[in-house]
Length: 395
Ligand SMILES: *Cc1c(COP(=O)(O)O)cnc(C)c1O
Image 1 (cartoon, rainbow, N blue to C red):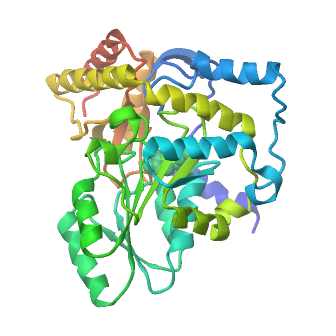
Image 2: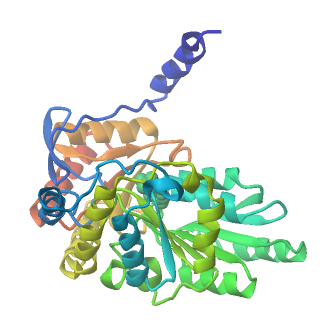
Image 3: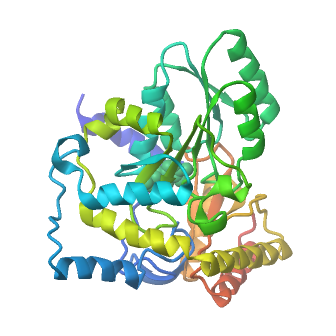
């Protein structure tokens, strides 16, 4: 069978189910007002929570480095274990570890790869992975790459989790609890205090993907542990991503010396790939300085979240109980979500329609993401447009 004959019907079906995805073409820097597909619009769908993606300090750091005697090649040339591990990679790992108060961190080119690495490397046959049902796709894929048995528990259901912990204990099986810190499509925060307590009670390891908490939550933006006043213990594994609040790209795993050395020795998604360009590590080092000192931006972000929620609830939108920058408006059917998203585009607002398989069936939604760089006026304009669409199209 030809590729054409196999896949044309699947593409057609996807289109008929209102699930077809297209890549919007962006003609401007990442910022609140953008040119997307030739339309000028206010962007409410990126993860640039602190407005750092187009920050002048980061661009200046790159320019300075290129214009001075710093002798930096663009390409890293090889994997970290070969000849790709350059000075700025190394310094960045130390600075991230100091910032988070952990023994070590390890850089990856993307969060997706970091998440493929952790479970595959640490979890062996006979072990058990207990994963929240709404975990990010990269965590689900990472679990599948490991030899462990994978069981999912209902979203945030700590009693269900404890029952599974008891079962695993009875079978003498080493457990890793795997969860998003801030859930990427829902915006709610995992109950870390309970999770840490459960992990400690059952000698389980706790793996938290803090892609959306790093930079936005806690003092100095240290993420969801700091947000709850907790400290990661020796059996905690944290993944942070650098393409969201950091405004750059890449990711890191944070934890103990033994954890990091184990990943360096055995993690295939670490070993068999080229190191990110050193210039990117240099840009991330500059972003880290900004993130640490971004208390004013974090406060502005909280104010924007509060302002959006109050306005949206006043006009009767079906919000999710989220206190973070991710604010889903639940609409149910995929075609409704697409219709709202299209109508918003016509009105000059870019808000993504999130549909299955990214979210469960009949839970299609608009995913509004807020940034410290949005103005109150821009949020009010979005609320007005949502109100108009609600009256015209309905939910
Ligand atoms: C975005 C995201 C990732 C992937 O990170 P990338 O650096 O974009 O590959 C992983 N986990 C969660 C929860 C995310 O939202």
